[in-house]
Amino acid sequence: MRIAIAGGGPAGLYFAILIKRLDPAHDVVVYERNAPDDTFGFGVVFSDETLDAIEAADPPAFAEIARRFARWAEIDVHYRGETITSGGHGFSALSRRELLGLLQRRAGDLGVDLRFRTEAPPDPDADLVVGADGVNSRVRARHEQAFGPTFERGRSKYIWLGTERVFDAFKFYVAQTEHGVFQVHGYPYSDAMSTFIVETSEETWRRAGLDQAGEEESIAFCEGLFADALDGHRLLGNNSRWIDFVTVRNAAWSHENAVLLGDAAHTAHFSIGSGTKLAIEDAIALAWAFREHPDDVPAALASYEAERRPIVESTQRAAHGSREWFEASRATSASRRGSSRSTC
Image (cartoon, rainbow, N blue to C red):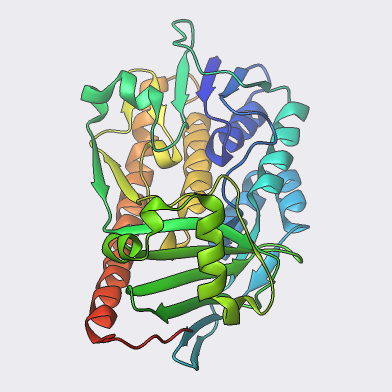
């Protein structure tokens, strides 16, 4: 079977690995528009459940991932000098760059054809076309009427940064300013780095003048605001900019021989840490659907969607509630702020 995969992120690479393991005779090509070491963002999060699925699906890839983990079991909320801790969660994280690197190596070792700096062309000879090309998927756009995508834009602005301060838990910091409320979602992903996502309402973002700020100015603003949380450490950018979170849904995940994975099919707000988890689990489910229906593409795609859609929709409902809670909490805090300034 000839398989063309658009997108060399975790979903596309992991599906390429698994489908090649199922049948080495498959001709699998991954098209990635960026260079092999280009990546955006910092750390990615896995639940213990997802790690169990990865270990069962491909033990060599799991062994490589597990060697690089940062693990934690607690969530700390820092607000007005107080810390509230919730324990027993069981999450792991690692560098997105490292994850992509090890998946690229694993795919290459299995004989997957990796084509970087290359847009996925329409491939009329492919038996299966996989759209793992993100929120702005071109595969989805080519069949937009059939997939029926909808896009729900959140009411916040956020910027994805990193810091060399290594947190000991998942951290939420809240800062009240004269402009409004800013929040941080932070977590470790190696023995040297943590992810540091700063989120605020669009109104607060504008009042603070961040709509006119570039990357360096935004980093300097966030460093000053969260100096206590950073404890003398710097913030680092990676093509970082203030963006809106967009929830993607699709009426259908497949059309003829084309199928969507990961963010091309669905997104879930980062506050529940499920983006990469969902992408990897999609890849596993799609590969296992072809294990059950190796010679029947329509049946495999129908089986994949039937299994994954209820799980994804449940996660999206939880993510939607989480996103709305953060949006409402900023609005409530802003209404009480008066003229005082209180940080984490």
